[in-house]
Length: 112
Image 1 (tube, one colour):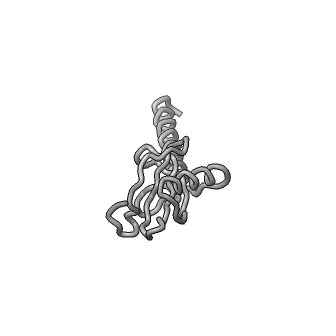
Image 2 (cartoon, rainbow, N blue to C red):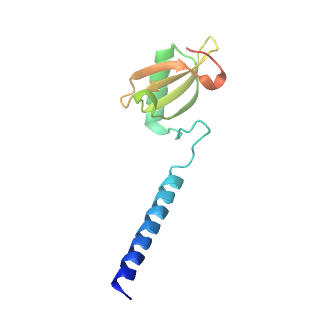
Image 3 (cartoon, rainbow, N blue to C red):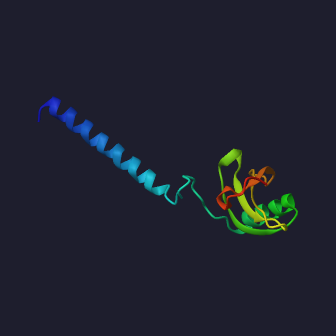
């Protein structure tokens, strides 16, 4: 093999490896919904803490869903149906402090 051919071959192999690695990473981050955000359900202690903090912030209600979140600087998101029937998303930081409470847009509500 000539030196030039070896360089071209190494470059092609390296580019192929990068392309396959990128595809693997994209596939590993699957689970995206139509809105484009990854949702991972919480379990155990983190779930219990997040739900407790969210219900305290909303004055009670019923928890519909609890998951990891990255919007508005939050770590967790808890969807709560308030006692009055409105549904809100409570976003919490990594210490379970409220970052924001906002209307659940998926229900078509305009706000909290």
